[in-house]
Length: 200
Image (tube, rainbow, N blue to C red):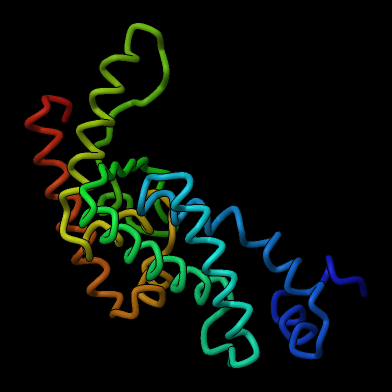
């Protein structure tokens, strides 16, 4: 079996046995998703790339001690989220503008739709609605940027990355009930913002 067809667990075993090519494949397999998470959290391409690079450096150093208590994707997302959080705070201390975008990707198809529905605007780029859409997204981004950190991170993982409550709980190392309450509160705040903007 060649490396490309192996699972993450098998590639980790190969890496632990000295095959560094296995780590290169893990990078290729997870880099885009980790970058999307980092960018959603800090909204800066250069910083997001730096965070992902640092994530893989830490993963390279720590993979030999990885026990598999969680899956690799969750472990990597935990690292990238922590590093992005640190970068976000560093940027804010420097006074850098931080804009966060949020798009509803449909939520978990197995969950209760009455709980999942979040009234977000139609962001299609119809020419006569581009200005309105841009203003709405700016309003949402500002709202997200001003959410308490725990709510902001949870909302991004749920609505930008469409992660399950269980996976978010693993990444943020909290209970599923805590994730649900954070999302409910985050949605409530954003709905208030959108109502003030006259969209919802």
